[in-house]
Length: 306
Image 1 (tube, rainbow, N blue to C red):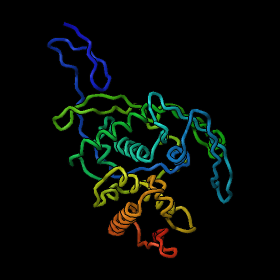
Image 2 (image 1 turned 90 degrees about the horizontal axis):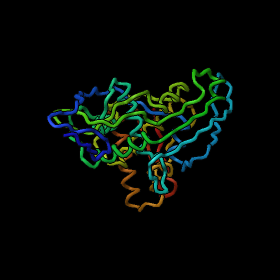
Image 3 (image 1 turned 120 degrees about the vertical axis):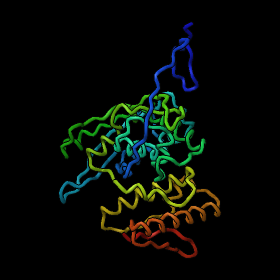
């Protein structure tokens, strides 16, 4: 008896009596390094509401000792994704994306949401991952799969000699599949190509690579903590390439966490988490020291000593 069925993930298959569909059995390759995109395109995607029109970015980059300006055009559409008047590509999506990139570069053709969570939190291949985190990451990966991105970097390519001037396609090119891992059937993804944003940032040499153990901070990893940790890491990595002030402003941190209008108690918790993360990074010799700066009675910034 041949009968068409559709599973909960909307993947169609035929169930034939006595036939079991082939299953993919994988073991994960734990990355040693965590890769972050540091380009302006990635940052704009997380900080501005991107409609389906073309957006013009004015970029300043150094070529030798000279600083030049370039125009890069980006267009993004979210096919089948309900962004509900919020940012289409969120700060959490950025952390998920960079975790997928890190897993891909470690040699993983197949990934699962649990593998992504462990990568973004610096864990190994065996720790338990709560179902809520699995669902959040699965939604984020699916959003990236259905997000069509076009980057017209013609001026940059001409100035810096990129092999490619236009980058176009799904933000993550991946098939959703069922795989067997650790004796359990789970939802996973087969990565079909090098992630598009990573291809662009690699060409423009705007990536950072850090020891993945820096993400294993001794804090419960909620979405906010994952986003905060990624933000601090991205900002500190950027500081290494400049000789000017190495200061993080709490106003920027609150904005990144969408906590500008949060209660005083929540902002106190955010500052406490910043302190715990930075103390851990001192222990790991990633930074030398830090200090909180006051303006009057208000704590308004953090100075980082590398």
